[in-house]
Image (cartoon, rainbow, N blue to C red; front, side):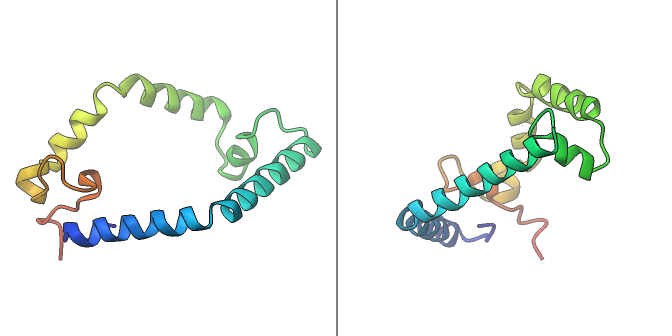
Length: 112
């Protein structure tokens, strides 16, 4: 999905979509089973939120995560512009507006 060739990125994306669509019932069953298992385990451990276990495993306090989340959400209006300015979509990547997956298009300058 990060190949410089637009046709390869598009073909890969379509193939992923085809496989996911063909196996949607299996993926849904697995996802729902894992979600329910996590809900049960969190209940047994008396976790106040679904994120608490992740915070504990990362040694991060929930207040720190909440502060980071709030800062990112507050910056949402600026983020897309920063992304495209940073990538210099046309100049650096060779991707033009309307190209397939332009956000995933790697920079030709950074490519080996």
